[in-house]
Image (cartoon, rainbow, N blue to C red):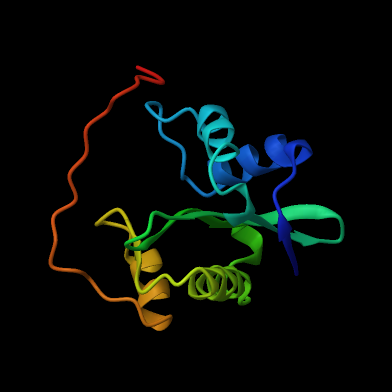
Length: 140
């Protein structure tokens, strides 16, 4: 798999990938999430490509305190082949180059397969409670 920066032409394939992986939610418009990301550290929005098609993605960012990872996705038929780990390694190296000391991400509590994936990569549950507040309504 070749890892490269996201291009605007990738949008339909990336949104379809996120939908196939169960990452989209009615209250988060993926098209708006992409548009917003392209205005901030777009170099940390990456896709994985095989035979000319997008099969993986990751959206990352560093805000000076820690790096955040969102929308890590690998096409369901290609999971378990190291593509997700390769994307995470790429992101971690990019974070290190920026001086980032820690990476954080959110996984839905019932998603045991994804939690196991991240544990294999050395991630552990932080003793913190995620809080959120919606400032802009994208959907219902």
